Image (cartoon, rainbow, N blue to C red; front, side, top):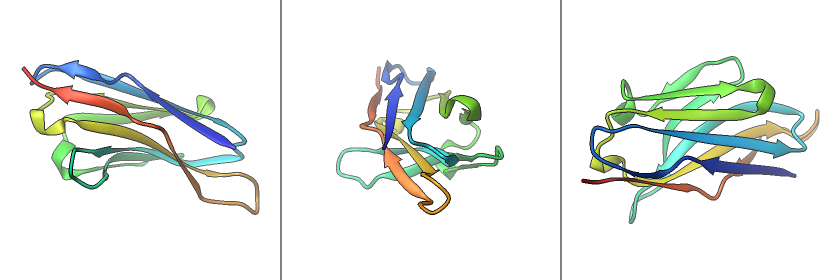
Amino acid sequence: QVQVVESGGGLVQPGGSLRLSCVASGSIFRMNHMGWYRQAPGKERDLVAVITSDGSTNYADSVKGRFTISGDNAKNMVYLQMNSLKPEDTAVYYCNANVDLNSYNRNYSYWGSGTQVTVSS
């Protein structure tokens, strides 16, 4: 099947920056889109940013102007550059890959196990 692995989380002071990386591997016929979601304690998992295979992007209002999503289609990788981090950005960040496994099995969604981002002084 498909495996999704995130990396790059950690502890950073308010105003600092972090870069998250994610790679999807396995039986991928076509990558449709990849994205980042986050879940803070006691809250639901919310969309942070998503990028499609043609490079179109979409961001949550709370991160616009601070976060940038980018991708490498050839490597099935996606990155999230996070600048001007705030304590409210603290959460577990999950990578999602939406793929076609073949011409008939389309739009399958796979998740990574998450990486912790903590913004604190």
